[in-house]
Amino acid sequence: MIEAVARVLAQAKSALFITGAGMSADSGLPTYRGIGGLYEERETDDGMPIEKLLSGDVLRARPELTWKYLLQIERACRGARPNAGHEILAQLDRQLERCVVFTQNVDGLHRAAGSANVIEIHGNIHELVCVRCTWHETVPDFAHLSLPPRCPACHGLVRPAVVLFGENLPAAALERFEDELERGFDVVFSIGTSSLFAYVAQPVLLARRAGIPTVEINPGETDVSDIVDHRLAVPAAQALQAIWDAYRSLAG
Image (tube, rainbow, N blue to C red; front, top):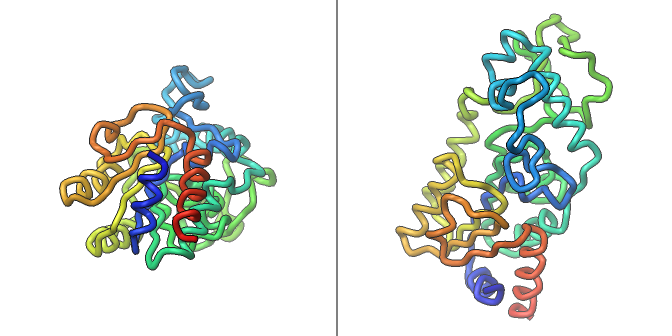
């Protein structure tokens, strides 16, 4: 299976890598709803589902509650560095004519590893914005923040530039992704994502219908597991390292 995927990559000029929380698991980040996730199968301290607490509605009504859980997530991510999987995708970015990373992750690790063409469809947790004015700031972590944080310019509520539950995807990022899909790819990877959202599963479905090779890397079963051409039921970094080693052997 590894050799077959490596051969597909060796013949490809373009590749799409769709990544989810499992991509960053080897950096020590929890997968939330995946295997061993931070909020898997349990209520939060406040007796509400995490999807409710991390929603735009609750942020507007009770920002201190949403920020309580944003801080929990940020603390779980604090100090994380790109793992071998991130670094291999950055290497492939330099090998292929066109390489696009479409990530649901808000940790910024793909960019930190050196991938150039990254679409962060859910935003970046390190980017803070004011809901009232144009103030914004990039921060390494939330350690210095008082909760809920207020804008130093207008005293409006500050939030991370991420998509909360119930909010629309950023129009610019979505348009850019649609443009990339229109151009097409020689291979599509789904890595560490449950593919629950239609816009995450769609590229795999479209590739499958068009006869374009598809690869899934995920220890658990997902909505696309039964339709991909190649399925590797192992963690992301492990699979990508094996694929990269086989790919380099073919190249050289």
